Image (cartoon, rainbow, N blue to C red; front, side):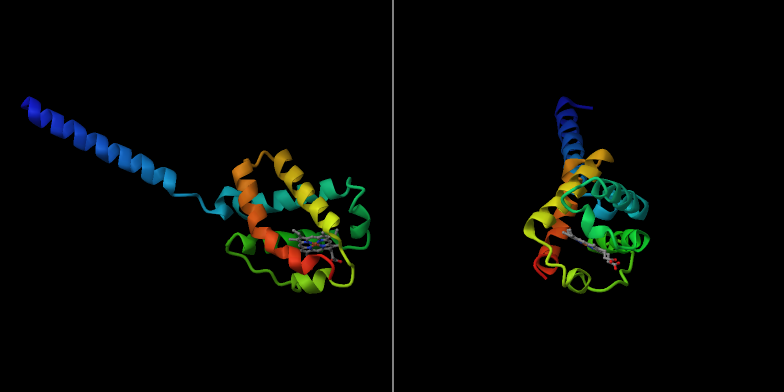
Length: 145
Ligand code: HEM
């Protein structure tokens, strides 16, 4: 191979290599997969329940709740929110939270608890933030209803 051909060949190879690396880093894993699919999501809700049970700011709010139903309902809700292959069959967020006058501070406490639960499970911060962004719109249906 002549020197000139060798140079062209090497530059073409480098171009393809760099293009394929860039392409891979641009393709983001789906949030559903990043959370570990439905099993990963139920691990989060399970951990969240443990954290809420220790949280003096909000634990009294759940004293009459059916926690089995809560776990299933929240897991399905999160699964749908992250575009997973699930169905949430419970009432709307507004109906579930209506009449309790949940406050801003309580909402923030639940978000804190969710972050702590995800930290305890070793979920990367970038994935945590992607989930929080999906749940943030729930705020208007939960607080002061
Ligand atoms: C990001 C914010 C929140 C989200 C995404 C959320 C979501 C949900 C979901 C999906 C359920 C289960 C509904 C069902 O299957 O029937 C639920 C139930 C419940 N939520 Fe929330 N919630 C949020 C904030 C809060 C806050 C701030 C409080 C109060 C401190 C609260 C108190 C409750 C209670 C007590 C139940 C159980 C209701 C029952 O079954 O009797 N939630 N929530």
